[in-house]
Amino acid sequence: MDLLSLRYFRTVARLEHMTKAAEALQIAQPALSRMIGQLEKELNVRLFDRSGRSIRLNEFGRRFLAKVEHALQTLEDGKQELLDLAERPTGSVGFYLQVGSYLLPDMISAFRKMHPEVQFKLLQHDPEKAVSPSFDLCLSSRPFRIPGTESIPVLTEPIVLAVPSGHRLAARRSVRLSELADEGFISLKPGKRLRETTDALCRSAGFAPRILYECDEPSMVRGLVRSGIGVSFIPLLTWGGSQGSTVALLTVEEPECSRTLELSWYADRYMTKAAKTFKEFVQEYFEGLALQ
Image 1 (cartoon, rainbow, N blue to C red):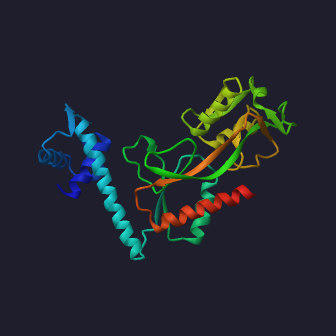
Image 2 (image 1 turned 90 degrees about the vertical axis):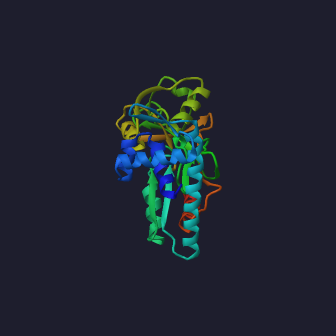
Image 3 (image 1 turned 45 degrees about the vertical axis):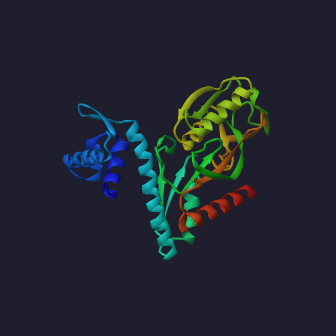
């Protein structure tokens, strides 16, 4: 059993497809199949259930994959630690942004002006569904939490109500959420953390929101409100405090509408100098944002 066979096994186990795994690893499929077969022979168990050309990770495989993921991550952590001790940091930060924010380009740009040698790997997959998600830092909103991570709050921001300038409530400074029970809402799609939060807020106010449009991106939500199509919830700081003259932002009096953003990292994994520096920067960045 060597490192190469373990890395190959991990790829096959994640994809559960020999052809796709061979393409990802850039090796011939027969060679990959032989290597997996040799590994199973050495372990004296089948790691995959095979049916025709399909393969599925079985219980033996799932248990072994967890150990392989941990072993390979430990070796990678050791490599990073040695590079840091030798003052040759790799300059790469794996950053998973679980909350949509227009602040991300500004945040990374400001950081790289001070540390131009640092590169970023922005993660787009959902680590909650991965066997062993790989990132250095994760920005998320409560109550999202990945097992094995530690978290610190970096910002608590109001969630306000955005209404078109011609709306019946546009001249108001604040509203009770129950006053919007008959309104048409523009919202993010189900599964988004903010959508779960705002749906829960509406339920606590005694109604289920009537959704007119569901969007993938915050920019589309804001654009549809500006067009006068409906109303929407807007996180005041991370989605932008100014929406232009065509939109009015109203404070929600009841219930209290806010969300808390957290920065998370794996407690048992080595954190590189680049990641530590960025972690401190993110904390200071949001502290400054809250004071504006």
